[in-house]
Length: 301
Ligand SMILES: [Zn+2]
Ligand SMILES: [Zn+2]
Image 1 (cartoon, rainbow, N blue to C red):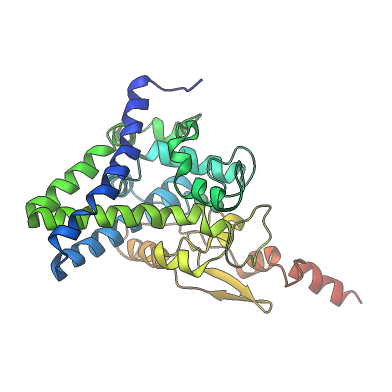
Image 2: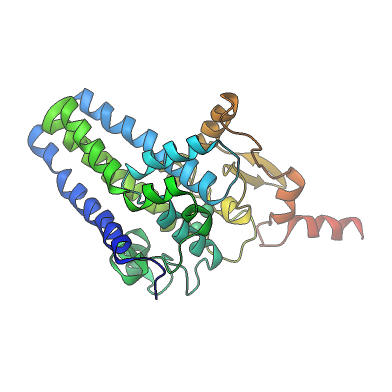
């Protein structure tokens, strides 16, 4: 039994409907072509809305990996909602469920359950959104108790529609097509964290799931593809970290640079990053053994 109203359920269904429409709307550019201006508009919308999804929805709202004024959280949530990423309550509810039971039965979008292979990939990429799993079983109480965030959650589709209208106002049908294209690519970019980052890449840290650091997903999602680090250190604001030959190495993580920029502007504080000792404690060698455990064993010989 869901804990929320029928109105909420209807408002949620508008989300995947808009994403399907966005796929179809992307076809507009076949007829209009894509000028440099419209392509730039698409890229700009992609980068800004991806940063809102990764830097605000994921690292701030869900994992509280840094602190920021409520205004940053609310404005960032409106921008993330304009990407067709649904509202803050829906987003956090599903992501918490993912972390609580990664690649296990209650994970809403594992590429290993309930399907495997190509079917499992499709399920984690998009299929789960068209199943009963789409409706979160429980909405996060901290988000629900903030009236502004709750309103953004239930009216999540308005920023998306408004941005489409702004695009049309700026450059007509071609810019509307660019908006649809940007939204569609962004949707699939974010979804690759759920799919590809649990299938391909390295596992430098010990976790009890299939999360991996995958450079392609990190490129598409401005740093979120360093997903094994994220599962090992969920409250770290920096995801771009690995361990090579017993040493900590830092990887490109534009979302972390964005958080550092917010910090420079005094819009973020208490940015959490694990120490090198903590990182090495969770790191494993090529045989899957714990590095620190190995070092201790060596010194005791
Ligand atoms: Zn994951
Ligand atoms: Zn997460």
